[in-house]
Image (cartoon, rainbow, N blue to C red):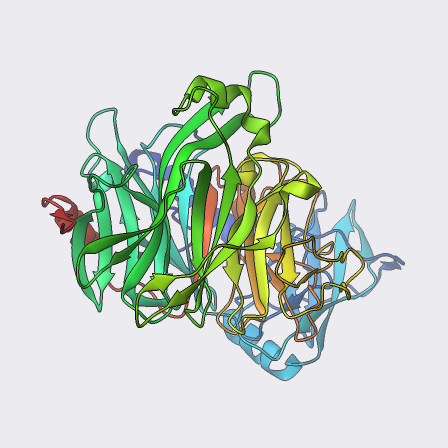
Length: 524
């Protein structure tokens, strides 16, 4: 498994484009360690405008250095705690070992940062800002898809993993290993059981299609489709301790706008929910109401509830008519539901409405439940299910333990009739004017992770936010990069991030060799 820092040699760069690797290296060399503070400067009564914006954020005590830059200046230095960094060009790059000591000493407190910039031979000193250091760690790894802006192309797809305590990034699987011709191979929906990698999965589609499942460390390749299913299994979530995975099985379609900024709509013309027993290689249907489009199943951490999303739709002609659906895509607004689950009998209860998004003219998808079972977080947009394409999409959260008559937070509202008792939390500090999507909790519930296009509206980036024990969300921050300009130069999105307690140990070569075999058929 090849290892590299995320600023130096991104894996999408091919050998004949190796000059870009040199370019990223030169960018890094523009950072200097322990320069001198300017002896003469003009004091400015405002905080500096830095990139990424780390001013006032709360970070875990095990996060990699928060390197940053200042635009349109000739030079910059910053005093971070008791140490000084920068000293060449416009970047501040912090030594990893010293950063760990700084965070250790500031744990539960704040780390002051004072920035000095030089332009036209004159130095300015800005008002200090603070980086708050939480008591709680963040899970040390995340994984994500790396892909260029695309709607139907599959020529460049990589699932990667990043060590959040430093800048090490490695490849889990790269579709270049197997793609031949123009059809390509799609890889998606990577998922883990209880944040571990001994039980994990992802899909391969088109060329060498199937589902890669690691079960107790052993790799199997499965054709997750039988005659009872709409399609091969899609959106998924592992049960927290049983060897079963909940899936939706869907007919997916796209519609493209010619003038709307949204660009594309992704729709399901039919969808059901199933569970797959990994050990028995058997599928069990959970929900298959022809008038409901059910998808995005998500287990509660105690394993007693299966959350999901559903929208009601009745075809006028009585059968699946995609042309009709294209005319009515704005009516597809999903509510949040849940089913009780008995692990001994493997049976489910009746659907319970958790959140009536439709009554608010909204659509809620991608639910995730906190480890303590108290909160459910989700993406919410005007309609549909892929909110990363909707500029008004935000992250929402419900307090399941609250009383419907006692809403929490500035934007809290009482539950609608028939909903599970809950109140909405105020997530204004988390959301932006551009799309947010795919939220999740860390294994200790103290960190939220989500994807956002707030940087430039085009590329999806990964963000974290501290979620304290009082249910308050703090200012989010972008995943740190060794070179602070990395994400400005990376013309690729980081998509569908997942928290992990450990790295994936199956190598890309092992996944590749397994993909060349015939997938196992689901037992009847």
